[in-house]
Image (cartoon, rainbow, N blue to C red):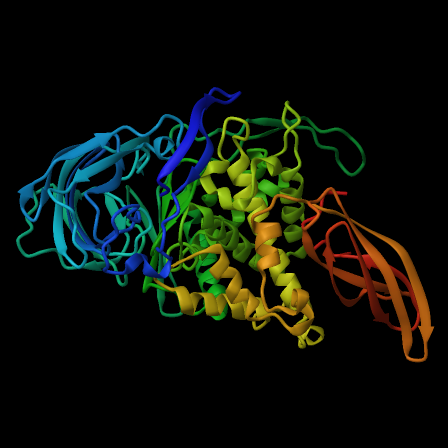
Length: 628
């Protein structure tokens, strides 16, 4: 959270209000570095946002379907830096705080509405400011107790509730790693799943004849906690030692779209017309497909565990959730009802081919978040892009292995989405770089966050992967998509080991990849990806690449090729690693090497085999260029 934010609430063309952020920053802190923010020396001003950490949550909640909860949350806190007088939390605007206590004594608090149109407001959350009676002293530990209740659930019908539809259900400080101990009481006819591992309920817990209790304790510090509730059927499978359980209802939410009844004319082989046939679409029943969905997630766990290291938790629960959005929590996934459709049902609902492919990837995408977002979190909203972009790309890696054409189709759709003009002639690529995070959501670019964080973010990881794996000495001994032990995957394994349980910045992320750079990929001889950070992560350009002045000079052992690479419609300092290929008679293009295109014109000299007739740039479309 940055200390200074300026902007304006403004309605988009569709009537939805967005808070258009003009600028957001924290004043420079003289003498305070990233390393020293956890120091115990007093800071007289500009106290860091995370000067007080919540080490653990113990939340006891009574769930009263379809809408009500009553909760008590005990937070164990520790002061990291002297100086804070106010603690800020996010909490649903539909929850009413009854009291806040500090070490058993009441303290003042303010429940302030979030600014209209901001991401916080759009999520249904407000800001709760807890006023400490005196300046917090570094090293002190204390307990905060919140008592609150309200209608934070939404009823979707047919045994489905939307948990968190109206905001955060417990006082949340953002993505801070903490231990969670969650206990629930709820009606017997419902099934409740939560983050953590089932544990015995506390001995003094009691429940009425129509209630049941469950308790969930996190296996390791996690950034967020959630729960889901429904009248589910259950299916179970395994991924190695990991239990994978899928929970879905026999029907979909009451506002789920209905496929139209169709009249189809058929012809017999002898061209005689037959009477029209009435085609009645099948009624979606997620419970019928929960076995297939669970097996998809189990395959993803095995795939990712082989590459990034073991699954972080002992079990994974996938639970049906109404609406189009899905969400991954540590050990718990909320899966949209749409993720339980089969191919025939997607066709009946007129899904475009790319939409159908993306829907099939949702379980794998959300499973990837167990590593990227839940185990390794982002440092600030400016680094959030890596969680969505990397989780999405990891799911696409699975698709690329089994369906290269489908992978290419999705990547090209992301490229096209970035340049699709609105009525004002603006494109999503104009919304800003991936590092703007949720600030990309604005009245001018309602779809900017998705196009940039998912689309461009996915492309950034594809560029890193192909760049590293192109220069892998073992490349020619493997299939193009077989890179389970390549430099890119090794970097992700290192990322997991180094930052598990910690946040990571975009610069730290790239440093991990830079450690895999061979000499041929070191721009200006430096083992650094600063050029990628500045030009591609902090930039918005989509270059147009062209060749000119190509010359072939025959030599005894081959051909020497010289030429110039042009980058058009880009900043003068954009650096791009461009793969250069030779085309020989009757053979697939052969990679000659990679050239750093620095600015608008860059010359190169490469060696090519005898018989080279033509030079082409990036024939396999691995660089995020402007669509041709």
